[in-house]
Image 1: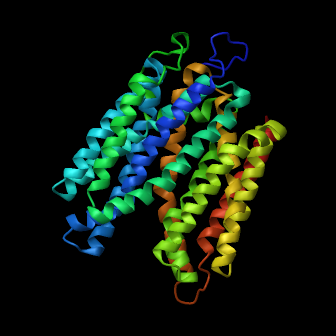
Image 2 (image 1 turned 180 degrees about the horizontal axis):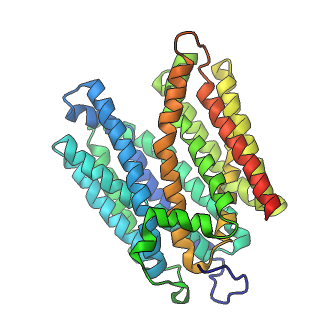
Image 3 (image 1 turned 30 degrees about the horizontal axis):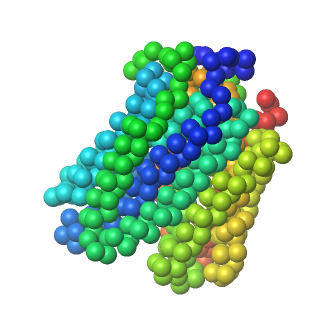
Amino acid sequence: MTTPDVGRRDMAPARPAAVIFIFITVLLDVLAIGLIIPVLPRLVASLSNGETARAAEWLAVFGTGFAAMQFLVAPLLGALSDRWGRRPVILLSNGVLAANYIVMALAPSILWLLVARLVAGGASASIATASAYIADVTEPARRAAAFGMLGAAFGAGFVLGPAFGGWLGNADPRLPFWVAAGLSALNLLYGVFVLPESLAPANRTPFRLARAAPWKAMAMLRDTPGVAGLAAVYFLAMLAQEVLPAVAVLYTAHRYGWDAATMGLALAMVGVCSSLVQWRVVGPVVARFGERRALLIGLGFGAAGMTAYGLAPSGAWFWAAIPLMSLWGLATPSVQALLTARVGEDAQGRLQGALTSLRSVGGMIGPTVFALTFAFSIGPGWDLPGAALVLAGGVLAAAGVLAWWVGRQT
């Protein structure tokens, strides 16, 4: 295993223009994903003969399959990018996504749609390569702010994408897939003509298929000094994040009587606040307090915000908790910056692939855990509708304690 060397002459210098390039790449990618979020359930239902229960079963398969493909493919793409560079992996993934969205737009059956969705899960794992790109072109001291920009791209894409997707879907539920294909094709052209390569030839490593397996990626996280504890913190944070897509709509409808439009506005507010924090707040806070303290501050606000969501007695209190919760956005860029500083420049792709696999495990476990917690909490004899959100707050608190302990050990 290559160990980091802060004195390396071949380490890429900070290149703000390259960070902007990858920001646009990720924004277009996430916009394409977000466009289909509102209409995929409708298309699944239409291909399931309009049977709601059957459509729900298929959607569970779609969600689990998408996360499983990310888990399997992300380490492979990370290892390929360590060998051939980030640019060809990003371009290949964009090309596959463009073709795949066309297949989804034309899918004549539920099985065609499922296969296409699985392929999309694998291709979207290239976002890990974008994180490796950030590590390549940014000095360690500035990586947290750069990862914050990447998080802002995610937030903006997931705010704008579903909004436009729902509007387009009112005209035709398959239209957002065509627009997503166009965005991915545009992203491909942008990469061909604008996106430079970030990984210097001197920092590339031979490709070995055995190292690209997910279990080998997990072993890398376990065996690299100083990485295992931080990777566990990252996993807990990603696990807690799954609570909102899993139960937010059901929770707010049950407790506050919110309709879909109100919940959509609230989620948009969450996305906007989180993007602002990651775009404008991460850099100054990390510069003043360092990555470790910024990580602890972010996890602390996240635990408090999730708990506030779960205990909010009215919709107004839920809204008031959103700015508090958004400061959780300090945590992820900080832990990513700390992790990238602990592996060599020739292993950043494998690191990000491994982290994406961890995130995918959270995506497979979290929805079930939080949905079942919510169902139990409103069952006979119980009136604790916010239990799942409070549980997520507890997970973030545990992540904070672990991060504090890891900091003391290292």
